Length: 190
Image (cartoon, rainbow, N blue to C red):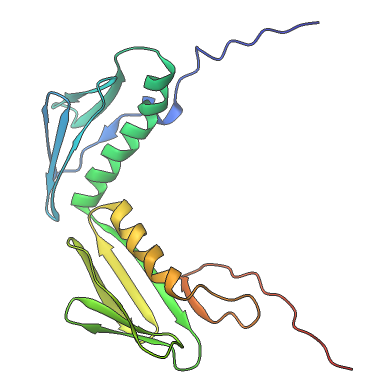
């Protein structure tokens, strides 16, 4: 038996969901551009031509729609909805990423807005904090990176982690809080 499957009818489950707008957030649409303003700041995003938004002011909901049913439009449908939802979440509550530093003598400190990492190299490593990101040092081995754009917070956290990734034998290095490091057994002597 031969079954013919037609996947053209499938639609993104994420893209179909509406985006709820919190009380203190203001959303404006100007053609393909979405402007979001909230207590933490302002963000804007220009959508591709295959995607458009509609705003229901009475229900305080935002809907993302496709102009065509092409493969490219289906690919951008869920992505665009998620990016707009992240913008709304960022201006209302913000995003945080916690980083822990493990190792004897390993620590972090602030020098102005920049982060100074002492992680076993001959000189401290200076990480320049991008605009829109704030770094809070809870203890010398715990950093909290926060901002309103999720991708920028994650990217800066990944750059800090890449300075000294956790090694598998003793677990020394920089890791995300709650990250599970797979450990290897060392050599056993006879």
